[in-house]
Image 1 (cartoon, helix red, strand yellow):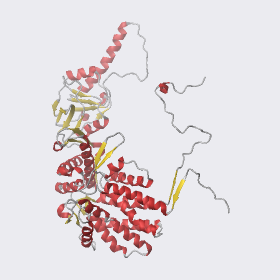
Image 2 (cartoon, rainbow, N blue to C red):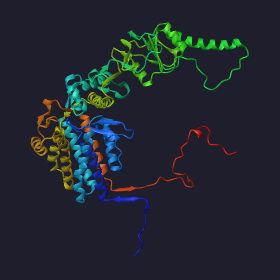
Image 3 (cartoon, rainbow, N blue to C red):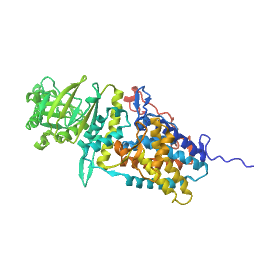
Image 4 (tube, rainbow, N blue to C red):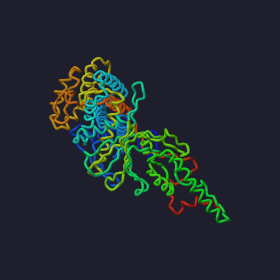
Length: 556
């Protein structure tokens, strides 16, 4: 009897084979179950306490999973899914996880029957291709300029969110904002940059109904000398600067030895003249409002207020970019290079208002602005955060439609049609892949089933009735009315989803399921390798304030 050979170190644990598959599937199902109840209009909210004791109340799949701290590696990769979905298309974060969980759940039976994971994956990928072709078939194009269609669409996407009780409000905001910043690239392409040019300002207080999209921008700043400068200017001429209006200090320390007292006066005079010079160059263009990202010295303030020009200093770069987009100004780096074309004249009104207990500057009524601010008001911070998350989703949906104006039915109708078509096709699939292919078809029913569960209707009856309606891939628009749980025509109810959200959901879910199925070994407890000969302590040494100054003392 020979002694067993140790390959792995004692500290390593290795699980392999079916055990791993089961563990992964269990973990993924657990993640899917966490957010299953947040799908659809009758969804529940989740309240999460984070480590600092802050509260997040939300039903946005991504926001929930982002807060969770999860140990299991497979569950972690499920969470990545919803993040991908959120970054790619902004909506469908919950469905993606529910679908992936279901895909893995139906695969479990095959793994018990000793199917090889690659066979299952092959069948799944085939199912994915067919599902996408079904999507193409049932999708319908829409006219982007038809506002009522667009509203219906955005509304059905936010219908599942907490703000659906405010109905059209959020949908309106999202549509206004995205149509404002859309830029035509030519060839029918549209670029909508939500992140850069739409700023969401949350100000607690007031009612949600007071929220609006400004035809321009606002920022949390007041003019430099409130008493002297104008706080309301109609049709202002705006100059945006990116340079400090104060005397340039030398980069490195310079010592000047002055022998005569008059030289000191000359030095001061030079500083003053330098600033005066800059101000004169700026005032040549008769601006009404000068905004700089850097500092503005008292002397410059004095010159500006004497000329009746309002000035704002130390503005964020992002805000400055938005102002430039909104009023047509160009951000200038050196005052001596100003040209008439750099002055922004498209704004209709500049004014400073006090909201709550802070001053906000508004530059509004712009002609054809390419940037905008969404002003959200609401009772509490938590409410505002949730509204902002919903608005992000709504804007992403609006952006998706502007980019690909194609719709598919919502309310689980798409999934049922896909499922029915795949079931039909499964009979023509040859060999052993037929069964996993059929199982993938059944897995798509998870979404309508979850919708029915969240409405609290008899799930089995509803599902069989729906399957009957969809039996041969017809009635593509029949789905579940998420509010009442009744079977209804999605066209009449105006419940739609964006085509690329659905496509992305299917792709992400199936690809992730395949990836998790392919894992057959988990080795944990691997230590980081250290360079040979270095016996450093594993704990990082933390510098205290005391030794921050003396850079590692060099031994004499």
